[in-house]
Image (cartoon, rainbow, N blue to C red; front, side, top):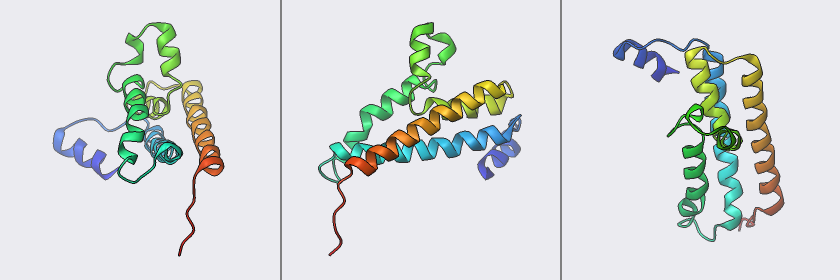
Length: 135
């Protein structure tokens, strides 16, 4: 939040119209990214391979979430699929909270999608994560 205030003061940009959704988007984005990264450890054999294991999912999720191309410019069928990617809810909440053009229905849908990805990732971690005993 400090960066938002500093950016507004130094760069002369406007503050978010609805900062609650911006904060919710950032927090949910961090939680989803962390839990999905932990879930990909099922396929990772070493610490060095962790960056490579998460990269395909991260790139597809970032490209399809509206960061590279806004979902409004995509064909409807593709946009519907991309709305369900892990980082799409965070981008939608931050963008909508910043512009003030996010309705309650869209916001709750984004939160529900983020929570679903979090629950799915936590389940995957609990089920398949290989814990090593401490020595």
